[in-house]
Length: 239
Image 1 (cartoon, rainbow, N blue to C red):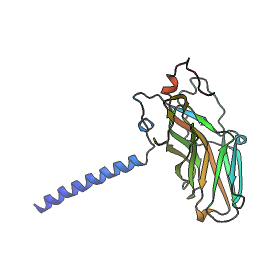
Image 2: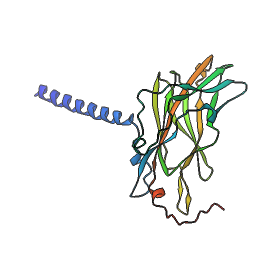
Image 3: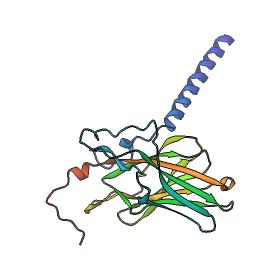
Image 4: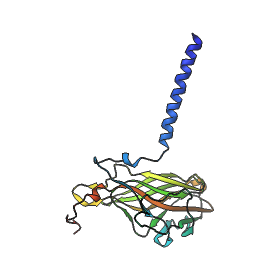
């Protein structure tokens, strides 16, 4: 009787551990764009390219004058696991994709330091953005990468993409939370967000020497249903 009870208890514990493990695996997977900020019964989700970081002349970086020197340049290379966007080749899109954006920081001192990498103009995303992804080579530091965005109403937000504590290339993904207003139903031309740039918040213990960071293949998954079903004869309110 006692041995039978122990077997039953062991079985229950094993099932509980398997269930918890399943939830943990789900927690580290990429967010499902189809379940983020659902505002309508119909969606038309598309993955689109925002920037391939081919030319460093379209980007600039900033750091405090007392904190260090920062440099950006394009470098030839690409993540081996990067996949083409579905449908690009079918519609004849053959954009050059052989470079990545390199960032080098020469720290002057240890401190609570951050720096930013920005496009020369904000990068608009059509439709209602669900997720933004980026390939990053982080050089295994505890620095934190954040995405800076702005909506059509001028509100800024910083979204944490994660720590750069890995070696080699990694695809980093951030979901756009529903509390960021991307659409005003009174104005059909005011929709979506703009990417202002990226911010790196440095770990105090690792702000010394030279630090290298590489970016490639900035993409977004966006809902284009409202864009595709907008009346062609509607009047633009931008006056």
